[in-house]
Image (cartoon, rainbow, N blue to C red; front, top):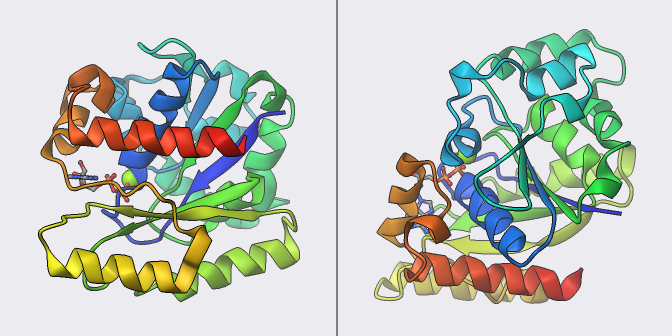
Length: 253
Ligand code: ADP
Ligand code: MG
């Protein structure tokens, strides 16, 4: 049974998509069969793997709104063992359209029922909000990973996210676990980065991943080539850090 991990934080620009794409690719290189689900209307994970969202005939939108079987929208990628359920901008509308749908919080969960066994792990890239798309993602998942950017306001908004996670645990998905907090864009020369690290470690203790993702320009360049970091610059610090993160996850599987 494939483990389902949501990568969530209602803040934009904290490294959700970078983590989703590169962790998924690293696990596929480790010979796991991986499905990456793009739940963000901005479709950055989709384009980050070389797809042009506007050219897709169908997307996760059709699965969530029209009961299209998810199998029919899953595509293979340039990386062996890595598959994607892509997104398109029309997913923006789903947030509103879902409001009147029955079991609106469980649409994604329902769609995954028959395919979970076919993958070793399923990674969901969430949008930067706590709306119904994120709620669907958390309801469908076994665990949630929270990337935090090493900056002054890193912890701002975190209590709101934790509240949402607890509400989902109480009402929709009692088994939802905390996979861990991941520090991203870490700059060891910067005092603030080190302070954020100490603060987050004190608060979250063993829930903080040992792996810390450094600020690395190669990580920000790779998506414009439609490639994960390993196909763009395997020797970069960014590449090393996501391989290390994949090792940490593999140990737990
Ligand atoms: P989110 O999905 O949370 O909005 P992204 O993963 O898209 O965040 O990252 C936001 C921006 O920061 C993107 O331009 C991305 O390329 C860049 N970025 C992400 N992680 C790093 C990193 N470790 N080092 C440098 N740039 C990064
Ligand atoms: Mg994103």
